[in-house]
Length: 255
Ligand code: CIR
Image 1 (tube, rainbow, N blue to C red):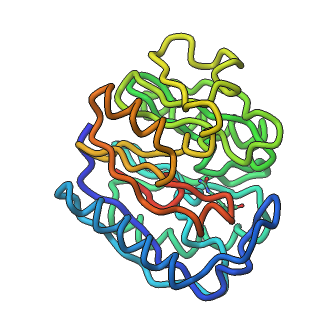
Image 2 (cartoon, rainbow, N blue to C red; image 1 turned 120 degrees about the vertical axis):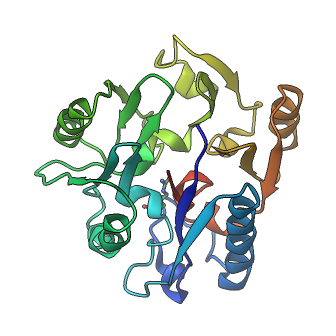
Image 3 (cartoon, rainbow, N blue to C red; image 1 turned 180 degrees about the horizontal axis):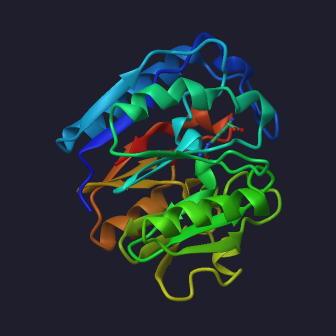
């Protein structure tokens, strides 16, 4: 699948107040802006158009646009984040999507679901229940995507892991990069799975964008594994987003 577009949002100064499971330091805005610019430039280098939205100071986590919507060839589904402080980000994203895609549907609740818990593969949509995504949210999404001809399978995010995709990513239609702990749950049985190197679990959240795989810098063993498997890897510094549990997929909507 070739992506022609992506949507990103520049981090705001308020990003220092972003949600985090554990406080390992305050993100440095200057460094984060540099990394974000590298990320956007890398997406553009594949020939895609990148819609760059302005910072939103009212929403500290708004740069993690992936959680606000699911983009499919048929249209986009607006999410309903499980983090109360992130609910308002959806209305901020909606107008951009309305003018960019053919059809918009929305999760109207009462359930919750965030884009970080959704992995779209070549044959199905996997959704991991998590602290942010509940059974009702998954059920509502299942009904919407089945109407668009997609199969949805509910799986589970390991305890203590923020999102399903914190621990996995799609490298091509049937190849998944996963941590061993997530793969051990059996959810990828029908796929070819490449494991992150021991001790490098924090790099499982990568993205395949056209001919490139964008991965966080600083995980040399996994980078080498991907390189040897034939992927063109671009490493992007992620030290600041990592302080907020964010990785490569969170920073864009791709379609
Ligand atoms: C949050 O806790 O919601 C943000 N600090 C990080 C969101 C990361 N998003 C993603 O993995 N899709």
